[in-house]
Image (cartoon, rainbow, N blue to C red; front, top):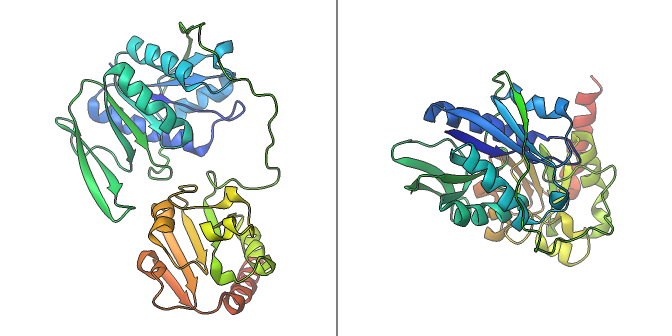
Length: 323
């Protein structure tokens, strides 16, 4: 018996997201009184794999099959399911990111497992197995009971504090049996952002909306983000109008994020936008309309014109950083 996590890597390196997953898995394994095992896919150095042992992973099962080099959710599902069966996993935990959302439903069918997507805390009960998740765009919580032998969970980013639990970790190689008849996609060319903090990795996000009034007024927002070492984002109308790139669009139809700090500047706070940022640990809103819905979701608010507030905020930060 074991709790199994999918330890996703990016170009052979683990990010905070993976260590959050390990921290969650270790505490879940303790509740179930079993061991924590991680499955890693792709070329990852042993030194990197062993870092998972700092967060409670007692065994890492490494798969480096040629057919798994491109992200084919069908083949990866087969591989992870075989590992889950080998370690007799009672629970399988993935991140609630794009890859986790693609794999979890397939794995649930293959393993005949109940699934809870987007959980944000440890189970409140093991027998019966009850987990909590946000519903109605973060406006309420639901308690889900999973009755199947195998449980599958996807964990919301930034919902679990990193908790070191150093254990002896071993690495085991595994050769999965894949379907040679499947046509796998081939990546012919890729373009990556350079020198830009990705929204999915950011601890702090500075976001703008229509209250910025024009694409020409974005310079102070970018300066604030640079001072805070933050990623930049925007509401949907801004990306639709071409003021900012579409990959910065946050909301129900854009990127769903959960930074420690989300600064919303000139954003009214429509339900669709809040759905994408409601898991942020702290929301700060700047808006000249004191009745804007964003203030209902914000922990801190400033009623004022962004064009006047931003320069003062930037000056104050510069003073603090120069002390």
